[in-house]
Length: 283
Image 1: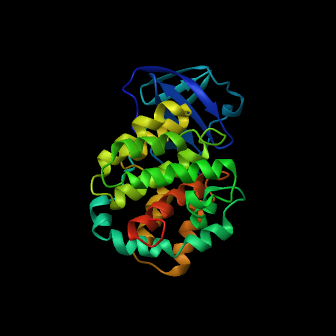
Image 2 (image 1 turned 90 degrees about the horizontal axis):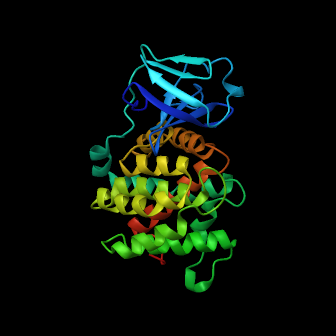
């Protein structure tokens, strides 16, 4: 379960989806009530079932949290007995095996590209360098330039990290734009393999948060703190050593997240991982 605001707390309904609704408390604190099939995540409270009437709620409606209850426009959600889920993987253990994990992840690149939705970021995994002229869309060209700048800053150049982030943040449409999802994956790679992930991810989120949507900024802040959804927990574990069938199954679960969000985040993770390994002439 996500960290809850301190009761009593007043907020507003931020957004309503088919399997989730999101509440805003204070200026930028978001909390999501989600259906079981969405699963655990840094912002999520997973319900046994979505409450009756939630589909008819309107964004902007006042929300109240108190006495282990969320109340909005006559709809009550009781959180008694909810269990806490830890959103941070065991980074210390995973970082000890970073190289073999990234080597195994690199083997997923072709598999991901074949199955990713058209126009999504995994197309960048085989792009030529910026100097050669990207063959994809304008969005992909800008994303590639931003990613290359972020990689150029990996070893400590703050201005390069910020410049690359600025090119990616808010890039594309939707509540979580494709460029933000790419940043999310890149930060997860940083938590796995960067010498100072706190420094790197702090720069990314400082530069990105004001350039994108509130929901996307909330996900980026969580990732900058080392948090990620349950599907990523499972993928990182299987990358540490499991059958190929299990690995592709967990990768498919990430890939299926949202329309292109999972694919775009996987692209960020794999793209940065390739550079860490030095497996590309572009590194």
